[in-house]
Amino acid sequence: MKPTDFSRNLTNFLSKYLPGERGMSANTIYSYKFTFILFISFIEQQKKINVSKLELKDITKGCVVEFLDWLQSERKCSDATRNVRLGAIHSFFHFLQYQHPENLIEWQRILSIKVKKSKKEAINYLSIDGIKLLLEQPITSTHKGRRDLAMLALMYDCAARVQEISDLKPSSIRLHKPFTIKIIGKGNKARIVPLMEEEIVHIRRYMTENNLLEVHSGMNPLFCNSRKEKLTRAGINCILKKYVTAARKKNPCLIPERISCHSLRHSKAMHLLQAGVNLVYIRDFLGHESVQTTEIYARADSKQKREAIEKAYVNLIKKETPDWIGNDNLLEWLKSFK
Image (cartoon, rainbow, N blue to C red; front, top):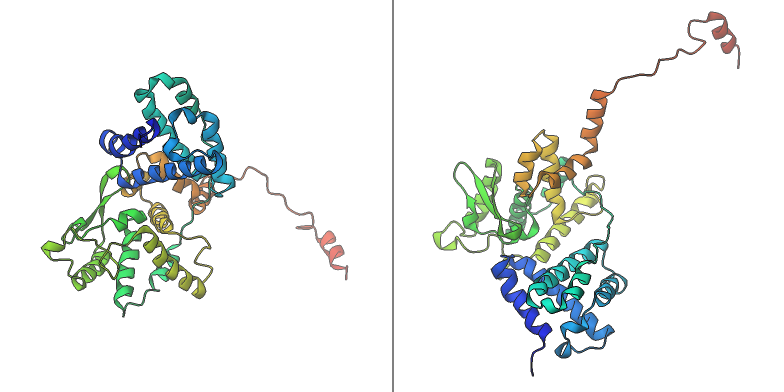
């Protein structure tokens, strides 16, 4: 079977352009690949075009808009997810501008599709007491409980994303002063995060128990399942959900309804901010590109906003004294009512 121009270009885009020229991470490439799996499913189901016959000329701006609407109507995707899928499609057609400039008008029509304005959700985070309660839930008399405690405590202490925790290796951690951890974040960008001695005690105990201090274990997964495979994002989320449920039963006031692995990252950022740490340092700690991204925590911290307003508040309204204060006759008259 002769490959179509769509199949050739999509293969080059995913296997050569993204990893080679753009240097995209495996996770980003997977996200783009999944977008086109969905797009092909839409084309086959809704347009009745078999993927083996799909050509670039079949893809128009109208077709892409229909696909985005289908994501939300049929798959119940959020506006944010729709925008992620549109970003992958935009990247592909930006690539095609240079591969097939003869269709430049249509590619630019597709590139003109705007992202959908989405509602920004409030940041979900735990108080310090909530974090303490959560970390009390793993049963440390069991092997899994000790692993889970070490993992959740580390996820909070270094404000790591769930994929960053999944990708950690024993060699990522410096167990001698100054204690640090090397985290590979989005776009394969590395950052060095300091660790406190209290956390090192837990992680060293866990690594000793699992023979992860040996030289030959340096590139093994730091956190793995019973089959010695690294924990996946879904697996880590499942572990957290178990302890969140247990903690909520003990004190529902401390554990919000919606808590994810990213909530631990948010929690650490908020606690750093509340402790008076400069936003610039929090930006570097989280691995953000710009301090503007980190400012969401300052905007979300109602306690700091209230304290700042109270410090700056000047009472400009004259304080009025009720008529009966200092008026004995009026006061006696009011007392006469029963």
